[in-house]
Image (cartoon, rainbow, N blue to C red; front, side, top):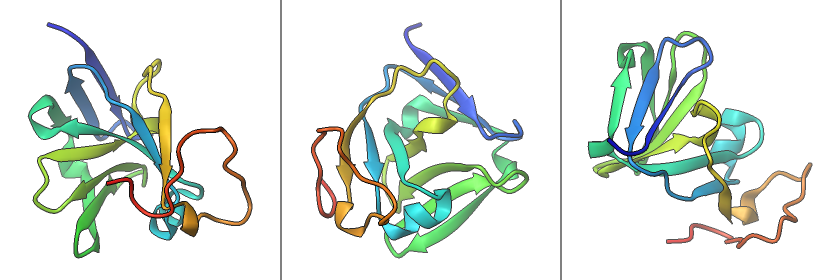
Length: 132
């Protein structure tokens, strides 16, 4: 059947399953991601055709900009995903995956907007805005 990766929120009310290998993870340092998580938002993009949700009725979607929405558990508040409007992919929070996830951060985006209380010095590619 291939690779299966599972995960969910802190309270377990929302769970997901991803079929197939996970891609690279990226770290977003924009002010919206920082305010939602307290640091930065690390995600991996998953094709919606390879993603199954369980308990999604316990999730809330927040339209954070005209281009995207964010999803989180309405019970425990765990951040779960970022999704571009009309996209066929969902950016799943790297920390929401059950361990071991085998994910590795490969790049940093929106570094021009990062908070002043930490440094990015891991040698990975950094972009002042998006990398696309």
